[in-house]
Length: 121
Image 1 (cartoon, one colour):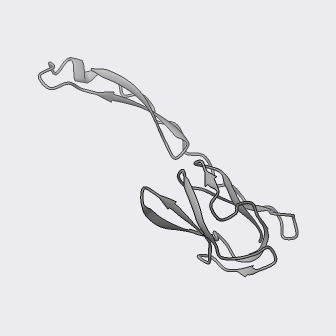
Image 2 (tube, helix red, strand yellow; image 1 turned 45 degrees about the vertical axis):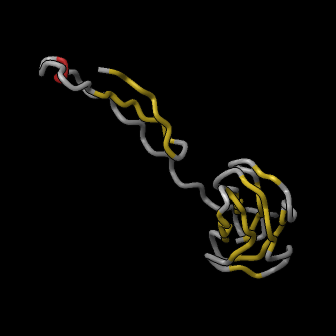
């Protein structure tokens, strides 16, 4: 058997993979306990400057910024468009509120997790 540590969406898991043809006694080993998932981040109280962060889900280039700070947004409102692997991906608001900051400009390259904007919920 082979053991691997895998991280999915920031949560680490210990995984054991059984190779084909191994005996049943090898598969009787106790499985490694899975890591407990992280609790969801709570948005900051209303009125906090940029309490809710909107981040890039993947590396790419910002091809358009749709809104400016001060704009009213609702859950799912497109803030910017990120091009990655020749596909355009909408970067959307994750809650209702007011756009506090826009931290990117058209043509800017971003990495995974880069701050795109903040929202006052």
